[in-house]
Each structure stands twice: as structure tokens, then as C-alpha cells.
Amino acid sequence: MEKLQKLGRMPVGLIIPAIAILFVIFGVPIVQLFLISVNAPSFSLVNYQAFFRQQENVFVLFQTIKMSVVATAICVIIGYPTAYLIVIASKPVRTGLIVFVFIPWLTSGLVRTYAWTVILGDHGLINNLLLDLRLISDPLPLLYNRLAVYIGMVHIMLPIMILPLLSVMQGIDQSLLAAARSMGARPFAAFWRVFLPLSLPGVRSGTLLVFVVSLGFFITPQALGGLRDAMLSNFIAVQVASSLNLAPIAAAAFILLAIAVFMLSLFGMDIYGTQDHRGRTVRKSWRSQLSSLGALPRYLNEIAIPYRARHWAAQLYQAGSGSSWSKIAGAVFVLLVMIYLLFPELIVIIMSFSAGPFLEFPPSGFSLQWYRSLFGDPSWIRAFWDSFQIGVTVTILSTIAGTLAAAGLARTSPRPRTFLMMVILTPITFPAIVVGVAAYLGLVNLGLIGTKTGIVLAHSIGSIAYVVVIVAATLANFDQRLEHAAKSMRAGPVRTFMRVTLPLIRPGIIGGAVFAFIASFDEMVVTSLVSGFSIRTLPLKMFENINQQIDPTIAAVGSLLTLMPVLWLVALYVTWWRSRLRLQDAPVNSVA
Image (cartoon, helix red, strand yellow):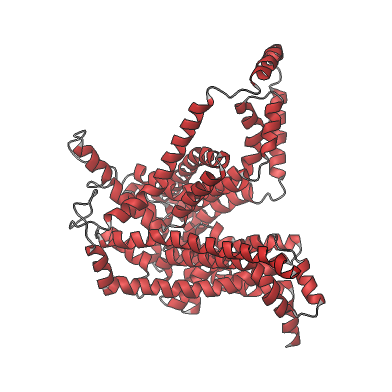
């Protein structure tokens, strides 16, 4: 008993609950899944060979990679200038734009996918508008094709690209750009030579996140695409639902996982910046090899230096005449991106008040009939109640385990901390379908398939990761000398944590709890694999209705789910504001 108490006081002991859940639900099953894929104990590659022998499997695999690459490239092209324009905006505008990026990111991905079925459908917004303007005589086939899938994927992934870019760009010292300008560099040259290289870590992080998540896309290709637009996740899900043979499923899952791990090891494991160093070395050798070709431009550049110096001196203290057009173009670009991110959710809210018998935009009249239908249908109420119960339970479990793990990691030495953090973040860095298959196998071992307990455990492995990330970020700014001071006053570890640490990191804990609830409440891929046929959460109920019938009741559900992120952001802001007031009042009280 004393050994257990000592272990609980050690930093590693705080991490044990989170690691135990991850180990049982994901760690052991993923190893077991790999052994199944290689036909252990005989160990052969027969299942992988069988996968690649079938031409349709290879086609789906390359199509998955291609669609993920294209969606990632579009997100980079749109996300980078958007993040840059947000960063250089004034503080009030920047804060508002960041909130506008957060709202769609926190909104249910299923609701956003459903919104595009409304916009791109035969009787959707675009076709109705073109028909009313008599530009077309028949509806355009905008839905159930590759273009619709790309539109939906980019809409869901764009905030995930923008947010890491914003995090990096806001940390760049703007005085470096001013120094470059003071040395005669033009605005574009200062951006290209100074700002862009410093922002590349954000580009790498955003690109990696978008690509890995895109590999596991399941809902969007099935809801917006045609039969030839399926991705490997759809292939795996169909096999799980229709076959008891786990060997081909395990092989397909590990092929997808191998691609994700390769990308993570290639771009995501470089913590100390060695990759950037190699990148600079490569560019340097590339320039040295082409030095002869660059001699003439450098010579002409030296001739132009005196003219550029006079031009810079003359305009140093004058406003640029062309800057107004660039500002207008930037404002229009950001406005279009915000419309692209927010307008689909607004469409769902408007259509939820439609008085017509089917989905149409603009609505033929105003009515609350679909809200009455929602609250009067026991199946919708039961689905909502099941999701809420599961979400609350996951939130409590994940917040406790994740907070303890974050506290333990903060007190662990760097090398084991890095390894343990990578292990805990595995469920949110691997494709969702792979996590779902592993969780399915783990719950089969425990006999919990089709139970709420099983769904809670399956959701918790991802929710714990979100709590750990957010609480760890809060603890990074926590002064541990406060804990040492409390212990020097003979306060025990529990009392120190409850009276000193907890009040200061409470905003991070609440933020982690909010994200844990959102992740659980919106989860569908893992739930579809482990819920069996007995439990239908709200996302599963919505997805089934979208596939089987376009019931306007879904618009009412979607509008309520769209308003949830606003409530979460308000709650987080109130928590942050109260903690800030508490910290401001603390010095006054101590002096008094």
C-alpha cells in the first residue's frame, strides 16, 4: 500500500490512469491488429499481397492519397494568406476574425457536410439562384461528385490549417520586418526573406495535420461524393460492417496507418528544428550549384543599388500610393474566406425555420414546425439524450485523467515527457478509421461492443489527448515556485494542488473539458464501429437520415448544434475573464 502511495506521488504515477485507458482500449488492440494483419504466429504478408493484388483496392488507396494531397494543397493556398492577413490586422479585427475561424472549427463536421448537401443539391441555393436568373434550364450536377467532396473537405480542414499558422505567425517579431524595410528591402522582399521562413513551422504543422486527418475522412466522401469518390476509410468501414474476417481489415488499416506514420516521422517528429537546418543546407548547396547562372542577376542587382537607395530615401516617410488597393484586395479575400467558412452554417439555421414540406432556399415561409417535429420525435430525443449522457461521462473521465497526466508530464524530464506525450496524442494523430478499428477490437476483447460504457471508453482515448494538450499549455506558463512555497509552509501535495495549482490552471481545465465534450458529442466514425445496432447517438441518427431521406428536421438539429460553439466560446471567455480578475485582485488582497 505504501508503494502505491509513493507511486501516486511520483510524476509518472499521475500519468498511469490516462496511459492505462489508452493501453487497454487502443495500445493492446493495435498490436493485436498488426499481428492479425501478418497472420501471427506464422508471420506472412499474404493479407497485404491480397490487398495489392486487387486493382480496386489499389485504386481506392491512390485515390485516398490524391484527394488528401489536393485538399491539403488547397488549404495551404487559401489558409496561408488568410492567416497572414488576420495577423497584420488591427487587434479588434484580428480578435473577431480568430473567433470566426474558431466557430466553424468547433461546429459539428456532420452539420457542415449536411449544409453543403443543401447548398449544392438540385434544389439547393446555387441551382435555385441560377434557375431564377435563367442562366440554366436544368439543375447542374453539383452534388455527388469529386468537386463536392473537395469543397466539403476543404471547408472542414481549413480552420485546422489556419489555427497553427496563426499560432506561429503571432509569435513572429514584427520588428524584424521593420528592420528589413529599414535596410531598403521592398515589402515583398521583406516578407519573402524574413516572414515566410519564420512561418514555415506553422505551414509544416498545418499541412501535416490536414493531410493525416484527410486520410481518415469518412463522412464527407460518403455524403457528398459518388461511388467513384470513396476513400479507404469507407472501404474499411464497409468491411467491418459486413465481414467477420479481421485479417483484410487489419491489412487495409495498417496500410493507411503506414502512410500517416511516414508523414509524421518525416515532418512531425523534428522537435529541435534539425529539419529546418537540413532545409537550409539543401538550399545553400542548390545555390552553390547554380552560382554561375545567378552571376548575371547579382551583377545587375549591384548596378541598381544606388537607384534603389535614392528611391527608398525619397519614399521612406511617405505613404505608399498603391497600398490602398492591396488593403482592399486583402479585405475582400478575407471576407470571402469567412463567408465560405460561416455561410453554410447560416444556411442551415435559416432553412430550419422553413414552412415548406422539403428543403429549399430561400424558405417559402417562416415556421417552427421542424423544431416541433424535433422535440416531438422520441427517436431524436433519445439520440440527443444518449449523446449528452455519453459526452458528460467522457468529459468527467477525460478531464480527471487528462489533468493528472498533464500535471505528471509537466514534472517529468524532457526525454520521457516527449515520448509519453507522443503516445497520449496517438489517437488524434492517427486516421480516425484506424483508431475506430483498434477500439472495436479492444471492446470486443472486453465484451463492451454496443454498450454506453464501451462508447465512453472509445471516446475517452481521444478526449484525454485534447485535455492533456490544453492543460499542458496552461501549465507551461505556471510558476512552480508557488507550489514550492506552499510545500515549504507544510502543505501536503493534495492541499497544494487544490489550493494553489488548481485555481491557477482552472481556465485550462475548463477549456479541456469543453473540447472533450465537443469531441465526444460530435464523434461518429469511432461510434459507428463500436455502437453496434443498439445505440444511436445524435451524429449517427443524423448521418442515417442524410443517407436515407433529406428530412428538414435535420436542419433544426443542425441549427442547434451550430449554436453550441458560440455558447462554448462565451463560457471560455467568461472563465478567462473571471480568472484574469482574480489574478488582478490577488496583489491588492495580499497588500491589504
